[in-house]
Each structure stands twice: as structure tokens, then as C-alpha cells.
Image 1 (cartoon, rainbow, N blue to C red):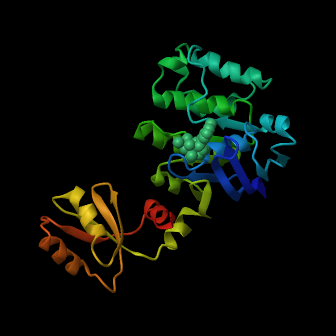
Image 2 (cartoon, rainbow, N blue to C red):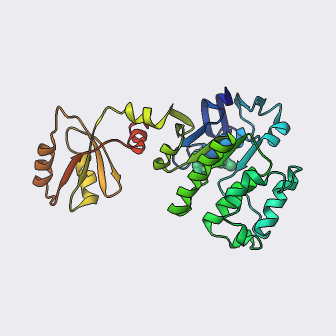
Image 3 (cartoon, protein in one colour):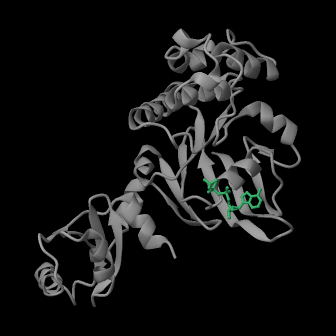
Length: 304
Ligand SMILES: Nc1ncnc2c1ncn2[C@@H]1O[C@H](COP(=O)(O)OP(=O)(O)OP(=O)(O)O)[C@@H](O)[C@H]1O
């Protein structure tokens, strides 16, 4: 059964001047971790604001936990937890005061729902007297998640929860989400600009310029990738990117960690013939190897 159901949602800012959502449709299953993955400006925050009843769409429908985001907006707010991009903490309140405030707003107490946040909150409890503004990024993230959970919501909306957070806290955060899903069957819609986090989700949707490019499990998205993909390195990485793009048989090339990833037409190029061409135009220490695609390669392949 779908806990979130979105149908042809369109939303614009400034009387239609900026179209942030251009007809978005998807369902999220109960107990699913659903990831919205896309670059800055893709429309992730706008979509979250519509789904959490903070913004009105121009057209289309969205139903969350069986309630319409327009007609039932007050009721929905009791049933969802929202962690906005810049954590919605009160910087001048202590850790404990923040959590207590969010509990009070929803007519509950920390004690009543402590079991939900216990695992997460325990890690920051030693600092409960510290002002939220004085916490590290990872600790703020844990407190913000505790605050979003303290009224026992059925669905969690997390907008870029791992942006600007160190790699260890990022990993821990995903482990916390997996536990929430497993222990409390929570449904989670989470956005991220980090392509490598896609594998943490049950299903993902790639979003770009207000449109969804594809929706599937990360495994199926990778399986559907049929291009020939090579990782290429040389002593002149910056020039290599431009040079690769000018070689017949190279369809696309983009920077990928220490390498460039190139998709090629294998009826035109072999690894050896590409190496020869790069030598002729002055590259040294060339390494070319066939690689398996990642979710980032799939996104690059699908985007316009
Ligand atoms: N208040 C606003 N007024 C006008 N345009 C806006 C406003 N908020 C967002 N936009 C525009 O709407 C589009 C979608 O932005 P949105 O913030 O939803 O994207 P995003 O994927 O969340 O990216 P980011 O991580 O940068 O917030 C962008 O073109 C953005 O510039």
C-alpha cells in the first residue's frame, strides 16, 4: 500500500516565472526508504514543502498517509516528521530544550515516545545542556532527527539530512534510518545530492529540473545501464577531459573521483586505439580500464 502518492504535481514560484516541479508522479510504499536524488536546484526542497503542507502546488495531487495535502493539511502535520535542509533547531535552546519544545508542540512528552528516539538521542544526551548552536554538524543532525521523531510520525521527510556532515556521521545516519525502518516500520522519504547514498534506499527517483528521470531500485537502475564505460587517467587530467570529448567514439566524459569516466562506442574505439590517440596528442602515464557503472554514471546517462 502506498503511504505517499503523488500525481502530476506542478509548482512554480513568482507567478509561474520559476517552474520548480514540472509534473512529478510517484508512490512510496509503507515501510519503504525512498530516495530523491538530484543536484542543487532540482526541485527536492519544493517537493518536500508541498508534501509537508508548507507550500501549495499549482496543480496535481498528493496524498500522505491517506490524507490530501491541501484538504487535510492540519491533520497531516500530526502524522509526519519533517527535517528541513537547514536543521530546524533553535540555536539558543539547549539540546534537551529543543527536544522538549518539539514534543510540546505536538502535545506529547519526551518520556512518552522516548523508545523511538532512544538509540539516536542517547548519543547526544551527554551534551543535553549544550546550546544547539554549539553542536557539531553530526550532533545537530542527530538532534534534528530526534526532534522530527518525537511525536511518533508515520512518515519521515528528510531533506538533504547528510549535506555538510562528515563521512562518519553520514554513515551513522543511514544506519539510524535503517534501524527506524526495521524496528518501527517507519516510511521514510529522504533527499540527497550524494549519488553514492542511493544504495541505502529501497527505491530511488532521480530528479532534475523539476522532473523525475527514473524510479526504481538502485540495483535495477544499474542493471539497466547498457553503455560501455571506461575509467581514464593521464598526467594532464584537466586537458584530458576536453580531449576525450573531442575524440570520435567517445560519447560522454565527466570527472569521477581520481579518474574521468567515458562512455564509448565500442564499434569505433578499443582501449588500445584510445590510448594511441591520447599518446599522439601528448598524454603520458595513461591508464584506461573498463569499469562497472555506479548510480552516478546512471544519473549522468539519464540526464539531458
Ligand atoms: N523561494 C523561491 N523563489 C523563487 N525560486 C525558488 C525559490 N525556492 C526555490 N526556487 C527555485 O526553484 C527551483 C527548485 O529549487 P529547490 O530548492 O526545490 O531545489 P533543490 O533540489 O532542493 O535544491 P537545493 O538543494 O539547492 O535547495 C530552483 O530553480 C530554485 O532556484
